[in-house]
Amino acid sequence: MGYPAAAQRLLKILAMVWAGSQVTKPFRAGGALALAPSVDKGLSWVTAQFRFKSRGVVINISSPQNELLGQLLSLVLHCFYH
Image 1 (spheres, rainbow, N blue to C red):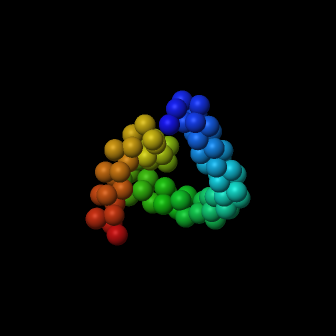
Image 2 (image 1 turned 90 degrees about the vertical axis):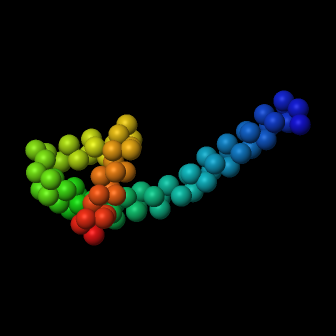
């Protein structure tokens, strides 16, 4: 496969991924809205359980920049508080 064919295939794949993302966007937005109260309750619980000063600390721990720390916290919560 040459460069032009590979580039054309890549563009087709990227277009399919973009189209799929657009099709599922309303369902993802609806799911986020439906789960928001549960996530809020969970953040409040974790904040109180570990005596953090604010819920922002919990959000910062679970941010993508701290992915490993967030996964470890999730594992601890699952193992000990499930």
